Image (cartoon, rainbow, N blue to C red; front, side, top):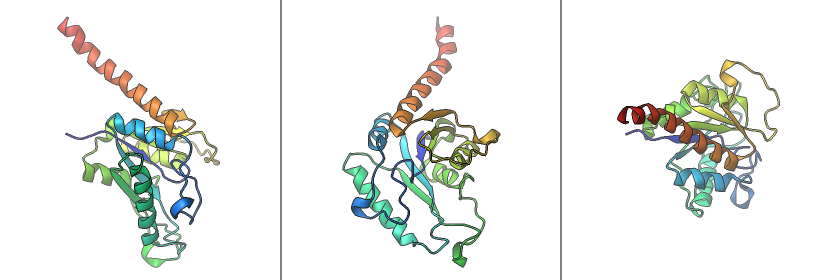
Length: 202
């Protein structure tokens, strides 16, 4: 049976956006992130990070640096008894300076490639899943994948280029508020889907 998940952007959503400075104590969780992740984990959602890391394509850091950052983040969350089900990153940018990564791809958000890969590898039901993020590119990726979406209103989106695929389903101040909204929405939707069958039973 496929499981439900919440996909998260990393920088500016879960942790402070401090480019190229993630090691050890420099990795700082944003207020509400740990509490929101814990709430969703206990509610049965798989927690998955999907993040663009085009600094690799521009030679600013290496894939090894991303792996080290992932390990640091996993350890930080493990101390709070929060497991990550998956961590996916896109190293590509067609305008990059490192030839190996300077290419068009299907994984760079707003394309949904990372979410689709996770769904395949982790048996995730995208129709029951959510994308939580701080910019509209990521909203678009979530919607193309078939997820519902939550945009954090933390000021990180500055361009506001709207289209039909870039409207979020919900707005939240932080991950903790997003977690409460996701759970409440799913409970309402589940209640509505059960109601016709309950009426038939009567």
